[in-house]
Amino acid sequence: LDKGFQGKVRSLLLEQGGPGTVVVAGPVKTEERMLAKLALYRQKPHANPQGLLPLSAMILDPIRASVVCNSSREVVDCARWLIRNGAAHDLPVVKQKNKFAMDDATEYDGYRDVNLCVLYTGKLGLKIIGEIQIHEERMHALKTKMHRLYKVKRATSNRNI
Image (tube, rainbow, N blue to C red; front, side):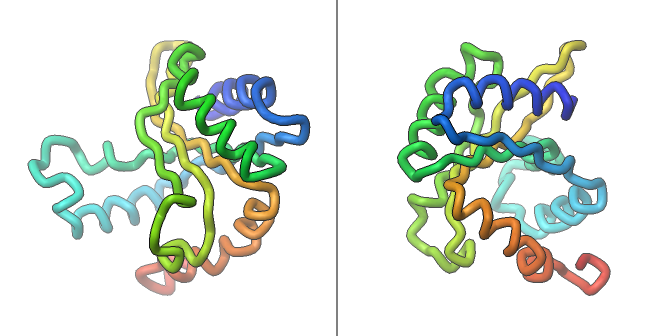
């Protein structure tokens, strides 16, 4: 599924992005990381108050791609285009998070991007939620440097680093 998802995102967003837009394949989320997320979700019953969904339904980024834009204007244009047109191109947006619009910059250590969760359907009809992170070029460069710190910050024990 990941290979098809990456190809779909790449062909769709390179066509719609600005001249310097780059699509970078993200790593598939590991089983270990998904289990760690499930453990956190068990501690937050308010996130699924009626318990209508299995906790695994809250993992919305098992497959990921980053779209790197030249400017914040391109980030906005790319996100808006995908929100409006994704369904017509078989990538409907099912959830969005705009970290530029968040009041508390400390929650993400000042990091900003737009995350869109999309429903991807593979060739055999299997569906999966994938995440498209849309970044401005400088923020993407910073993200790659900050990732080690992020892993330490979210770790619940030394084994998770």
